[in-house]
Length: 327
Image (tube, rainbow, N blue to C red; front, side, top):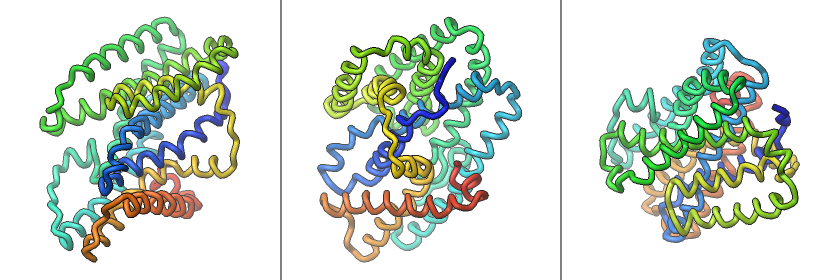
């Protein structure tokens, strides 16, 4: 599979998706930011699709065959930062419980195995488990692409049907059921998208002519706004599926600053909760809660900028970059 070693489109979308994640978690203070929030549904799914695309490169193109070595490497890169940030955010939650009397309930299994102590940390163990799950499959896919295509297509369809018929009251279900339905199952589709594009990269590249270069961007715009008009996890996933060929074959944008932002996208993802919660807590303590479009957008933008700066500084240390930032 003749996949390019460097795909500029990934560096283009990562910083944008990171901003969308900050928006998702910081939009509560304004009607308009909440109203536009469905446009960000693609953010985490595109991160997962990219991660599994690149993971496929490691397993198939580079021939990584040792499960233990793969698991150990991914544990250091994903789970050690997960545990460290879980302790950091747990300290923040304890501080908030003491000074602004925010309820603090701790389920240790849920926290240290699945979700962490902050809203965004679930991504790390989820990605780790996905890589453990699909490692053997990708080794088979290297030799049997037809089987791999059929398997992934069926998986995506079955999971999509399950998600389509998921009742709205799933948010009141026990936490493990909620986690599976709201996080893990959508991640299976995201993973499937990334792996399918990797497995079929050559075929798509060879047939990606002028018609595709005209149609795909149009479909990207349509499905992007469909997230707002038809707010559903499947709409966001559909946008990712349409966006991916644009990222692979058309988004040849090579801006140094975007590349630098991209290198820190995981850092922004991990750090932003510190600044969002810090700003929110400080405003609550001073009896000026974040309300209205100006304060809400301001907190989102300031959080994004500060998260990038701190990530950039911390990443200059090899140890911190590896074990805290996950890079």
